[in-house]
Amino acid sequence: MRYLLPIVLFLVAPVHAEEVRSVTVSGTAEIMTVPDVAVLRFSVEARAQTVQEARQRVDATVIGVARLMNEQQIPPEHLSTAALVVQPDYQWQQDTRTKSLLGYVVTRMMAVQLADLTQLGATLEGILALGVNRVDPPAFDTTERDSLELKALADAALDARRRAEVLAQALDARLGEVRSLSSGGAPDIYPAREGALRAVAADESSGSYQPGQIRISSHVTATFDLLTD
Image 1: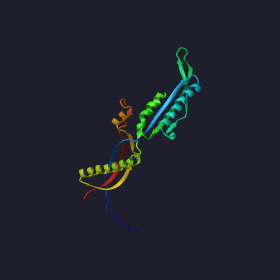
Image 2: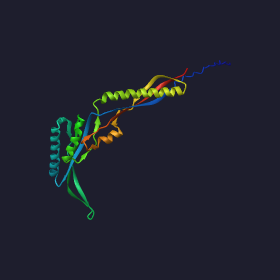
Image 3: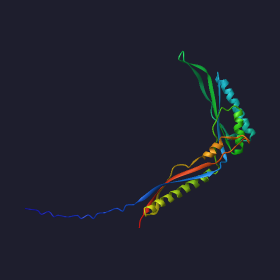
């Protein structure tokens, strides 16, 4: 007996998923402002044959710095001091190829926050006169940082949209809804080049320091839909 197997044809209509086109751009923004606060970091170092002698020299300078801050009416909580760092001081003897102990080096790092920039010159000159060995360039900031960072972030997002619109028009397309938006981390704050140079150089005629300006920058990345008629 023969069996006839029915033949069934399945016609599958081709399905083409609609391709969604998009454009990804980066946006940046910068805001210039005059700083109104500063942090001054410095350290004092002493070498002596004994740890106690070196520490006494360092402590004397630290006490002098604290007294200077009090004279300038800088709140005690605005002055911070790190723990002492003690290191042996060796000298290499070439003839015997051994190290000989010369003594010890004691270092203490400090930082002072200045809410009044007119005190910067007197503070810097004062701590140098007390025997501070190293002073870093002042780190300037602004009390309006939060609001300025938010403004820079919003401006960066608007810059990204403007760039996306230019690209869309160049391709005879229209810009659609924003698909994704991300920031490149916290906004950066750093001195403008000219301001940074003036910030660390004293004006000999007046003894004052000019902080210049600081720059707050922000960066975002955005993806928009591209629409065509």
